[in-house]
Length: 425
Image (cartoon, rainbow, N blue to C red; front, side, top):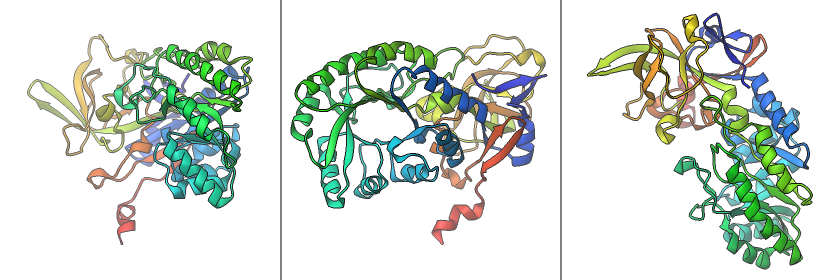
């Protein structure tokens, strides 16, 4: 569940009226709910409690160090994809053995930093990368563990930009090549190739692709073990869906119901890399209506947030439910859906101020009438919101706020104009 609810027609984050946040901090602003984050994390932890499971929250989804510290305190590890994310993880005092490092283009500098930090596993994407890791491990006199990323050729039926488990993907190796990689590198003295990594992509909405992937990979693990290789862990990536639309994705218990029976008694540690499923519904983007404009048959609601603040709609054609922060009571109980057929709603395009035709959040969207100065909320914005934000059009990055019960705190200040040019002086 999430803790964003309407009370008497006004939107609350936990026990804080979001209009109070906007009045204090300004807009646009990302607002996160601590209770929602912890609720989602704890449900995953409980659901997979029957296996030796390490949850490695995906920093790329939302990397504010205050949120990372909160998750580390709950026992979370982290999935990282860069030296910068390693640095962020280190600020939380997390157990470094709970860090997994993925990505097809790790630099020597990043690999050496991770070796020195003593991370748990490198997720290896190619033979060339593995050879480089072996060379750097030897050079630094550091031992490392590695998981080979295997593409099971499973389609999670999501957007083409966030599908990563097909044979044609730039990520990982196919199952047929995996045995050859182990034959060549599986007994190396510097890097212990002792795990398999599978990642289907982001935004999965059913458990079937994950079960299919496991079913395809388990015979590979059996074959490798029979040949004398040690396989101690399977990293079942991320990509678990988030409810951008109400009641459209499996729960943590649903995922576990399909996955746990397949891995039980296989003598495998399990690593999960959830991002969206923890943080997406835990965050909203608050933005203010600047202008209303009629353009032919179109009505535009122009807001002060832009594609530089939240790029998902124009990059992925992603749906985000959008609703005013203050509405008549009859509009308070609408479920998040792409299709609304309610009287007294208007069909509008919600667009930003950026000088690009692609700068939009919704097209032909049914919404209650709004006016200049009204506050609206873009829901399910916690994942790949702030982390993908930019300074395009020399716009300042927004503030981030964390709500805890009836209190809220600024966990990242809004950029100043001086910040914009600080590195150019």
